[in-house]
Amino acid sequence: MSADKFSRRAFTGGIAALALARRVNAQGYAGLGETADGFARVTPGKTFSFPADHGPHPDFRIEWWYLTANLVDSAGAACGLQWTLFRQAAKPGPQGEGWANQQIWMAHAAVTRADTHRFNELFSRGGIGQANVEARPFAAWIDDWEMKGSEHSDDRTLSPVTLKASGTDFSYALTLEADRPVVLQGDGGYSRKSERGQASYYYSQPFYRARGMLTIDDKPVEVSGQAWMDREWSSQPLDADQTGWDWLSLHLATGDKLMLYRLRQKDGEDYPFGNWINAGGGTRMIVGSDIQMTPKATAEVAGRKLPVEWQIAIPSRSFSISCKPLNPRAWMGTGFAYWEGPISFTGTHDGVGYLELTGY
Image (cartoon, rainbow, N blue to C red; front, side, top):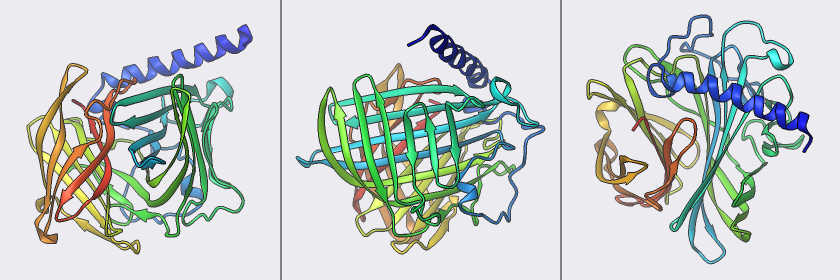
């Protein structure tokens, strides 16, 4: 590697780390409760447009392309993986060119088995071609990590796409296919995050079928299973007094899907919300008063006690399950540290999914 390339990469990472570290110490988890003067606002009634909304929205402060996959290997052993690309604007206003661009890109990749959890993190400054997202044909990348479609991909389903990422001791390469359109979360894609009006635009593709190769410690195995992609963008997705969230994406054995989150507040109150997605892609919102999310057991990870086992109930749907993690130590020791890992559940419904815990 040339000295020039190394110095630019180090500078890129340093700038990004400084900007992100400032936000870690700001209001709410990762600064997401910080006021958003000068940035675009999330309001009800948006008409989503694809493929345009698969691409970036630089007038908003933050957004992400977030994929998790529940897989089994050729021997039948459970495993999971995560691929996430984040974009955050350091300031509002017209987009600067080259190194003056205010967009900061960050990516996370992880693989999880019952016996191990591996992760990696990348940074980039916008405007230099090292990271970006294009809507058509879809391509999201940072360095050689990518989620990529083609001219033949369907904009409604965002399928098929390929996915790849790596770390020093792991890598994966998957093909993802779906036969149902993406699903708007919340009220037509308007996802409220507090009683005070904080919100995001939010849609998902929960119907991906995944297959490919997963390599850990130079030992490749074939894997297959289900994947879920979330797309969100906002300028202030949390209120200043919201400390973090507990989020679940669930693949039910019936073919239905369920998204649930509980946003935690400093006063001890919670803001829960959910969306039931039937096997055909139809959705029904679940109001907070009908959601019971009860931590049942904790694990001590990275000096924190984390609620990694849950009892979840939705009485109106006669739904009651117990969730357990594949690996309680699935800690993401990244710039924004959090817990993220595959889970399984049993009860009135069986299945697998992912759990994310932030702000602990």
